[in-house]
Length: 164
Image (cartoon, rainbow, N blue to C red; front, side, top):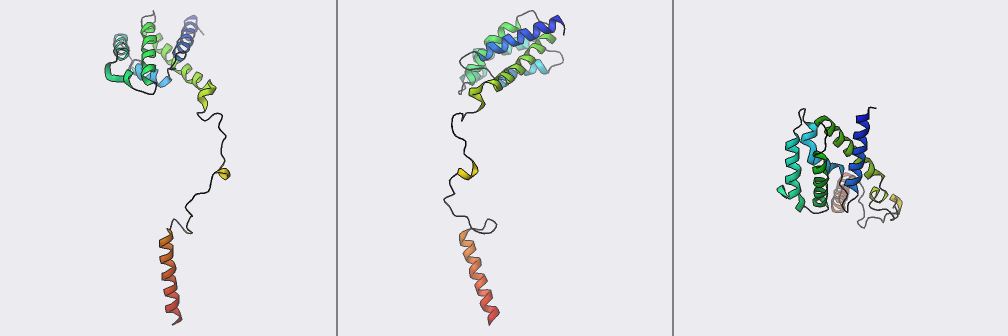
């Protein structure tokens, strides 16, 4: 691994730690949403990325007004990315840096025990432990109780006709 690659990986590590350390940890999807055009372009435009990060961070498009922590994630990502964009990386190196940061955000999110399961600490209920349905199931293939009674009546009529 070249010295430049090591520097990129170290910076990606620092950036991912900065993004997840806030009160509302930035997820991989938020980072990729802000940088997707830059990352997917064969000729990335750093000035366009700079404008996107600045405008989204200022509230353009209403992204920072969204609830559920998304707005805080957008603000935090915009603040961190604004500094990274100004660093002395080539466009290709910046793409690599952002790609590795996204990967590290994903891995670190999976490693956080409090986010693995929202139901942590609650007992897992097995199928046998679930309470029985209150509505009794009808015999047959999804036939309702009244339809089953009608079928029984028709069956009885056919049996009566067959006897006479």
